[in-house]
Length: 217
Image 1 (cartoon, helix red, strand yellow):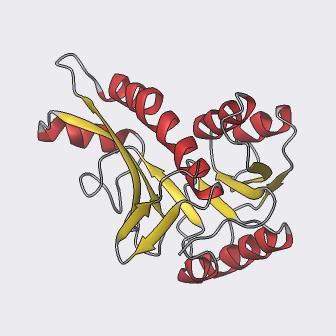
Image 2 (cartoon, one colour):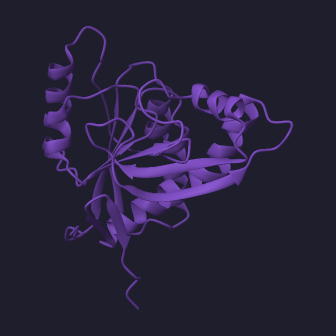
């Protein structure tokens, strides 16, 4: 059972690049859609990530932990220490291009979520990221695609699914146009929704299934 901590849920967003999903979360917060959430930290694996500028404009504290030159175990330990020091309740992977050691997922079991630009279990796992996902979907000839928010585990894209949203593939789609539509119509919609559900204590993990409790009235 997942229970909401007292007070606002302190969220850390992990990034490596442009931070479009981070911006979607920031915008949802600004619209009043995440009343129980405090964006407490943005951690980047690269010092030149544009996502850091987005965070700074929104007044969110930032931290850079360079992945380059560090062993996976060392990077994971530093990340865990940073998040624990900041008393983070929920970790959100938003375009975070780093594979972490299993230790991380033990520390943040059912307290870390990832957004993936496909309908898991299709086009997911090792090697499926960015445009590669949409190239694979178009190559396979599927009629619908979309995005998935799931709890992150040591198995890449293998954790319990929280939310999914689908859109039809259009005949004229390219990997680039499909990527944009999946972001705008799926990722930017369900990621804030999943964060809100967590912050309201409405998610329960039973085996591989995430149950969503009804909203209290």
